[in-house]
Image 1 (cartoon, chains in turn brown, blue):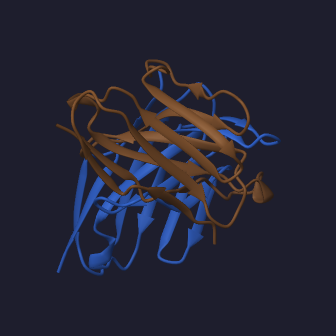
Image 2 (cartoon, rainbow over the protein chains, first blue to last red):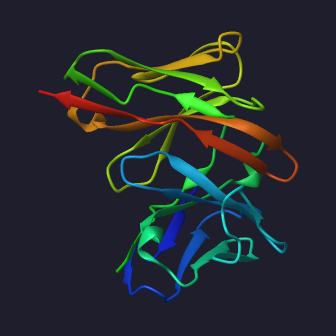
Length: 119
Length: 115
């Protein structure tokens, strides 16, 4: 089955530093990957849609200069939280869709998430 | 605006049947999905309804009524491992040829299964 990995699984950083999170589709190609943020006991909120070889599409209210997204290949997307602050502490989850089964009921496959804590 | 409303918490005992409702109001609609998420884990896909009616997948079934903007997830023969959060999600934009879609998630329902 389709597997999405994320690295790191958790990270603690000091306020003001930048943190990079990687999302990889391990056994399929994903032209499009998605980045979500989830605060404790809350729902998943889509932050941006990452397209291979082009600029990401950000949801309203998400600062694109703060959350830098790069989709360098069909299997890798990265999210960099720049100048992180305590309010950025959250669970960041990526997901991807296997285009070979696009159009079927096959939904997005989610990575295991990265828990970011900013001190 | 867009909203998907779910009960915040549901409790049940092992072996019971539980129904988790979802009412939605979104700008577009291309199907209703259900996801399960254990604490600290990734959401995992459970079920999808594009058309009205009932979809059955093992112990889980999902129902959709597009005219009522309503769906539910039915869990039968509950097990302790079913204790998790359950999210409905509407696909409100869809471009099949590019793979682009937008999933809008519901507020989530925490299911607690007791012995």
